[in-house]
Length: 87
Image 1 (tube, rainbow, N blue to C red):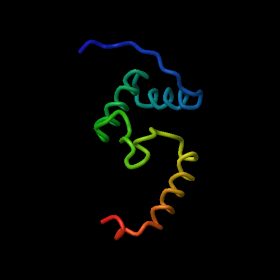
Image 2 (cartoon, one colour; image 1 turned 120 degrees about the vertical axis):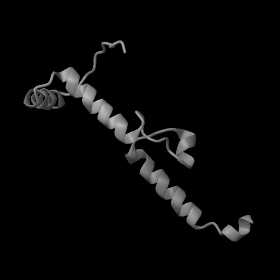
Image 3 (cartoon, rainbow, N blue to C red; image 1 turned 45 degrees about the vertical axis):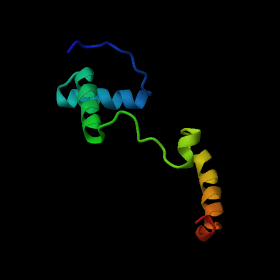
């Protein structure tokens, strides 16, 4: 495996906490980040979250505060549909 160098941007607090955690473990930041990513990918099996289902998959991913009102309207509208009319 050939290592790849990359640059990431972290907020100050996350950077400081990461650096402190690496120091407590006697690790470099590189080793801490590598272990954290391997652990995360090992638990989830995916780098990206699961794709949305239903109507959300048609429109893509949106912030939760934008999705909630639409989701509520869709749920309310489907609650008024009589399933017997669709058979």
